[in-house]
Image 1: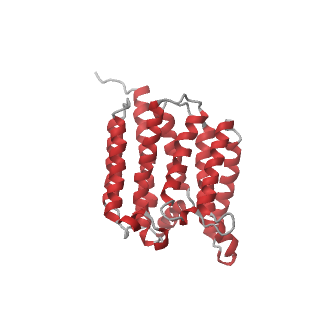
Image 2: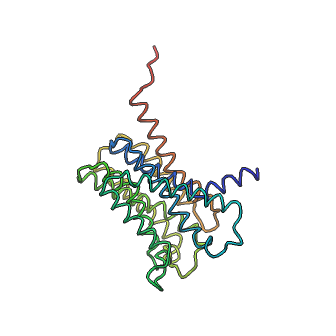
Image 3: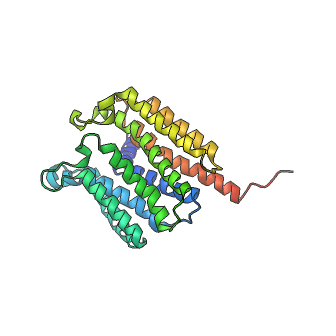
Length: 279
C-alpha cells in the first residue's frame, strides 16, 4: 500500500497527471470541432505542461537547496529534462502563428511563476490575479492552440466554444482555490480568502450554469455527456473544503477531463464503428 501511494505521489508531483488533463482537453477540442488528430499540438501540450509546471514548482528548489535533493526529485528532474526536449521538438513542428501563441503562453507561465524585472513579484502573488492567469493560459493551450494550428475559420460558434472552455476551467479552479486555502498565504488574497468558501462555490456554480446556457446556442450531439460531467464538477465544488487532501483536487478533479475525453472517444468510436445488431 505504501508503494502504491509513493507511485501515485510521484505521478502527481512530477506533473504527469496534470499534463494528461491538458492533453485530454486538447483532444476534446479536436474531437468536438472535427479537427484531425495533430500530434505536434497534442504532444506539445502534454510535454509543455510537464515542463512548465515542474519549472515553476522545482526550479528554485534545485538552485537554492541542492543538498536536500532526493532520489524522487532527481527523477522529476530527468522527466522534466526529457519533457523540455520533447516540447521543443514538437514546438518546431507547429505552424508559425501557433509558435507565436505558444510563446505567449510560455511568457504567461514565466510571469506567473517567477519574479521578473527586479523587485516585481511573480504573478501568482499578485492580489486576485492568480486564477485568471492559470485559466487564460490553459484556454490558450487546450483550445486556441489546436484551433489556430488547424487554421479554422473564426465563427460565432467557435467563439462560444472558447468561452465555454474558459468558464469550465474557471469552475474547476474554484475547487483548487478552496482546497489550497490550507497552503496559501493570506497575502495572496485568493478568491475564497476575499469572498469566503461559500461565495467561491457560488462563483463555480455560476460558471457551470453559464457553460450550460451557452450549450443552447450550439449543436452538440454529446449534450448528455456534457451534462453528466458538469454535474460531476458541481459535486466536487459542493464538497470541496480547506480540509480536503491534495488528492481531492490534484488527482480526482484533474482526472475529470481525462475521463470526459475517454467517454467522448468511446462514444465517437461507437458512432464510427457501431456494434452489430443482434437478430
